[in-house]
Length: 393
Image (cartoon, rainbow, N blue to C red; front, side):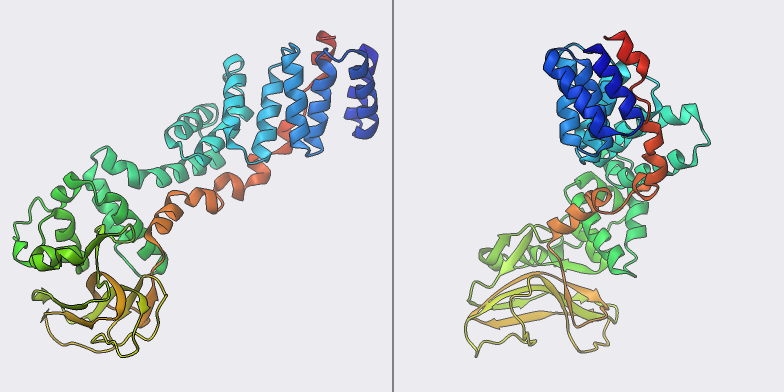
């Protein structure tokens, strides 16, 4: 048994994996409950990129009482390359016996970050920087992790000034990317009442006559010139019967025409010499004779922003929509601004939020961009040494 294990290891070093497997298979047949042959097999399977077999053989070696700490690291590496980011559990076990193992720390930081566990990611990266404070790769990764976590943690920690600065930065809608990040951020923060009170702490404007009765709606109206349909329901309680909950609404509430005649008369709103834009969802037109006072030629587009093709040279405007029935249409808000196109498609808001919450899972992060350096195969060599084999035979 021992001779076959040593021969298997020698052929493994020569990268003659086929011959190595032959000797190791013979060793396993001789002593199926001895751990070392499984251990060497597992490491060879890792180098052959057969990660499933690697994990299976390495666990067998552990089950048969192999006490080699690097077994857990190789299992972690195998899971990592299978994109199983719970590999951090295997790295953590190895770190109990070798808390300064650089490879373990680096790979576990990546796994934590892929799970969005940013606090643990930063703890591990801090430890890596203690070894080398000038490691540019780790420094970049540290900064990227801070960037990913900060905008959502600011409000949780009641760091409202910092959250406000981020909100102001994102309110620049110069690109669709910025706009969707802004929508995502607003959607996540809308339930934090204290944050919106903070933003309006020095604002004594009473907008209740417009139906605006909370800090979120007030900020959106005054800063982004968005007037929610839920504000209109507060303004005209007769519309309550048409109000519905909708996860794609920034306020959480919409009005649905429900195939009935509907006349929405808004209060006088500050316009500021911009175009009028409606966020609507024309689900179905049941009668060709139906009309809306601005024409919609397409149905089934989902939520869109429809910009009226007219210029209004007024500072105050009183918008209205008239629907004669036979149409299933939903309305979220009216806003004042300038879109490049007459019709702008709005993706489902939960999908937008999911995109930015999981941005790190969709687009390459620092380790993935510099994968040849961060996941250096050379660092993963020699995790199984001849002395480990001899000491356990």
